[in-house]
Length: 442
Image (tube, rainbow, N blue to C red; front, side, top):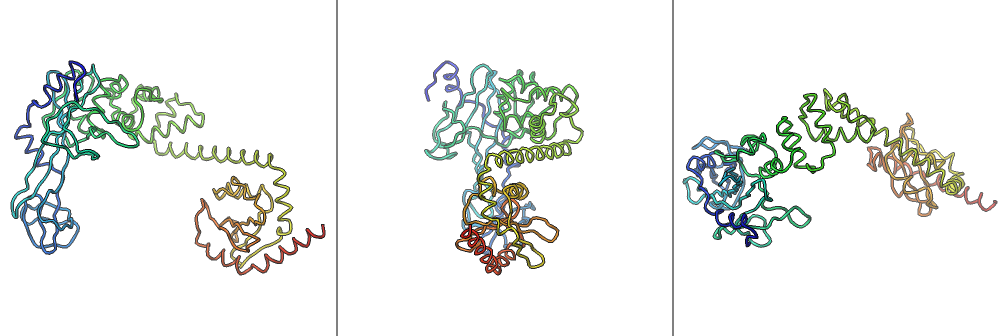
């Protein structure tokens, strides 16, 4: 990609001439390489750490008799091949500019009883100077692939691919840290350190970029709200985070947010339920989990109350359907199908249908099942009067259309309920015929 300004041209001229990794850094990469596996063949096992070949051992994890390292067993048909590849990242400075350098480290095992070989290739760089937008210098990638780098070509400026439905950002690489990292004096002044960047649960580029360009990120870093900074970078927009004031109140009261995700959900629930989210009494809880559970219960009660109000409104608006339903099932009101343990009765009014839907957390009322002709809506309950399942019965075909428990689940008594209804089909027909005779006489 051609440079559009002097800064871009400067990166193109220098990206391939940065200082190579030292022997100590290469040794550190090999020592901390995460892949520690044993390749199990038909009769032999190969240690990927030292290349030693030995007889198969039982178990998912074994110890190599040669290097004494614990290995995770992987079954394979390939004796010697590329084993794995991981990214490593080095924080570097070039002429006062912060450069995040990404290396692809590939592990190979070629011969019997020989140590594995490591190919280390620099594949991408992120240049951040605090004045211009972060720039990417990288090697080309095979078309329609994510990280098949064409290592025979040099690095040059590349266009950034941001996260969208079709592709993700291939240059946003959170690699294992390489020792000997350096950061610019400006970043140090703003509270960053190499240790903080490498230990953060977010990509190195994200945390550096946000601290460079956003004052709230710098504030979070300096006051020690690291978990909050990580959460906002990963899940929210730090430029217009809606609970910035609440975080600053926490800071004034020396309250460190340890579980940022739970705290954010807790504040949202407080806000939804009209609690004072500027009061330290609420936003700085001693026990965050207990406080979260407390507000969650209140929120569920509020939602249930709102649903009940909506149901009442719907019943009021649908008086005609209510009268038709009650007229239609009038002769089934006294029907009680039971085996001594379960009692199945018709829901006599639309209000009862609504209460059934709220209690059982399903859509019998919302989807207006009570408007269906030739349909019986019944409730199966135990001897204590507790609801077990809700039944939809077709009076034309004389079959159970569906029988659902809480949240549309199938209970342990589901088959028993179905069999009980099917065995009492003759009783249902009697009530149905009585209803038809009543209609004729009317």
